[in-house]
Length: 160
Image (cartoon, rainbow, N blue to C red; front, side, top):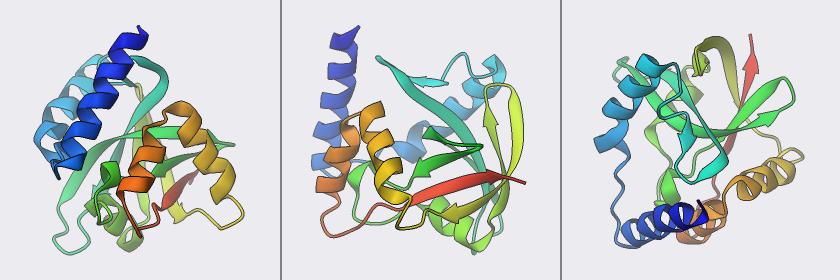
């Protein structure tokens, strides 16, 4: 269904050019459906079979409130990597700051819950990981351009 991928991409780009970021509005429903279905619903980006989604648990850096975010990921050896793109918005997503403050956390991929430790990708790792994200979906190049001067951090989630 390449036409569906095109519609998803065009809609996302249209919204992001206008400063609309729907992440928080849809997150609770996405997380609930993902957990309920073991990742069968909400485990992939519509129209993009290679674009897999995990659930990241994190604790508010200031508030201490536990949160969960659905995020696209790529494999990075025994670890996985996530991109703090925030769909090209000018600021890093809250989960990124939360992981810097509390790097020990858990992720859920399908029905599997994994304890992980978060770290920012090194300069040597970054180009290969970034290429993986762009290969998964070209939206990441749009996000990079849209972010202006902000370098989109990549976070490696290593098994604990």
